[in-house]
Image (cartoon, rainbow over all chains, first blue to last red; front, side, top):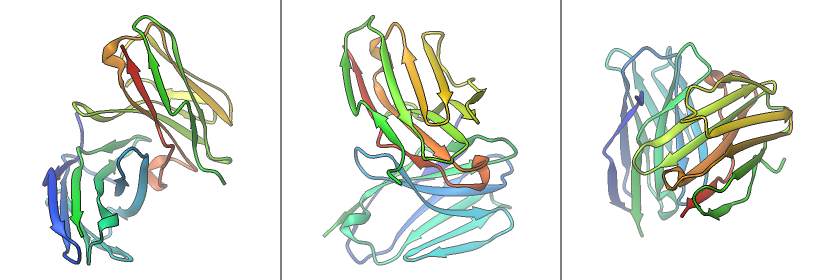
Length: 110
Length: 115
């Protein structure tokens, strides 16, 4: 079964607003990664956060990790129409396999 | 670097036919992964290679699926015979080291339709 479950499944916002997506997982992890997938394209890596980190930033992206709650969130600030995509979390633990979640579909209206 | 290259981008075939998907990973990457993405099941790892050697094929759905990596710059995923339920987008990805510590780079995918 999939490790990560994203919430919400779909999110619609206006340009300029912030978008927050959550990921919950079931077992221990070494790290958690977030990927973006534009329609009809492959996945693109956004950010990796290790289990001993609590927060990480990359441009307009902010990722938090709470290992006690087994959850992570991805915040996109000042969203743009170009941010419209599906966003996936992926977890890694003691194997060479990344396990991907179910994804959040984000729609940003201009 | 051109990134991960997959061919063909689209494949339409009839049930029972053999299908071969191809992938060229990023040069220097030691790990190669094959994924399948469907609306119902999401993104599933089928098999991955380390230094051209298959490490875990537990995700391969049936014996109809096979994958090879004859050298560091080429891999194939073959379905024989194909069935309508194999219709999906198949992605190839590569990474430099053990995937837990590195990002994976995905190809554009092959959209397979089996009629």
